[in-house]
Length: 71
Image 1 (cartoon, rainbow, N blue to C red):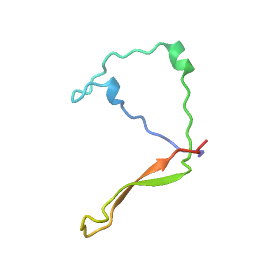
Image 2: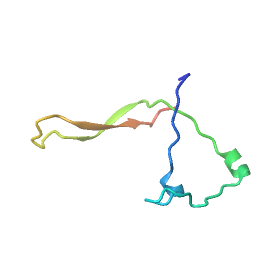
Image 3: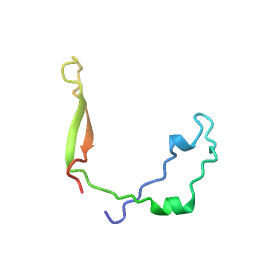
């Protein structure tokens, strides 16, 4: 995963909808220091929705990562 860049994304909870202005949300540095995140590869994918049975001309499906068993 070397060289992977994840672009920043605004969190809806921290920004007012439609205005794009910060909500003055504050999190103490000692609280942030306790937060940890880890990038985990999914163990597989599971189908969430499919167009099968909808009489669509094209078959479309939506998949979500299966994180059970991923470590």
